Image 1 (cartoon, rainbow, N blue to C red):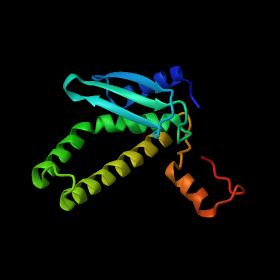
Image 2 (image 1 turned 90 degrees about the vertical axis):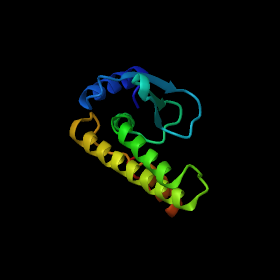
Image 3 (image 1 turned 135 degrees about the horizontal axis):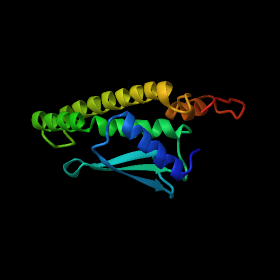
Length: 154
C-alpha cells in the first residue's frame, strides 16, 4: 500500500498520462472509516477536482489502479454530465419514476464498466503494479464458499 506522498505523486503521474494538466487536482487521504476505496469530487466550472483515497480501510489493494479509475471519471466527466442531463430531459428528475430509474441505472452500469475496463488496461500498460485487483468479486467469492482455506490474490 502506498503512503499519502506516493499517492500524491502517482496522481500527478497519471494526470500527465491522461492529459488532465488543465485541471487543478488536489489529493485528500481519507483517514477515517469509509465505505469507498476512492472517489473524485469535480467542480467543472472552475476546473478543480479532489481525488479522495481511503488510507484507513481500502477495499482494493492496487492503489494505482484506483487512482487511474478515479481520474478516468474526471476525463469522462463532460460526457457523463451530458448523458445524465439527457436522461433528465427525457425522463424528468423524479427518481421514483421506473423509466428514469431504468435509464439512469443502465447508464451508470455502462459508465462504471467502461471506466473499470479502461483502468485495467492502463494498469496493465503503464502502472508499477500490473496485477488488477478483483475488488468486489473477491468478497463475493469468499462469501460463496465461506471458508478460510480459499486464498485468492487481491
